[in-house]
Length: 141
Image (cartoon, one colour):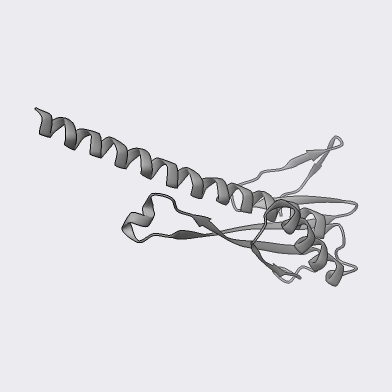
């Protein structure tokens, strides 16, 4: 009976440790996604007139939202000079997975935004049908 209790406790601790690591990885993923969204949205306001400023703004807003990440920008995106793609690469630390040799996990998130007249609509990697801003519906990119 004591052996069963010891094995059960070990399994419970292992599952709890796994949940803590996965939660940590998810948190960094969400931070990277928010940073990519912010960078793409800020950069789209400079397009199509000033792509160099758009790249600078994207990096600035990504750095304001997540530290230690690498930013990659692509503009024009898909042949459209009013679109920009911002990709954020970050490293999520492991706490208990180090026991199994997993010290960290790489996280990559992207966002695409398009300048639509004086407004811009971020389009995430998830599906987005439309965004309502100031009672005007913007088309998906």
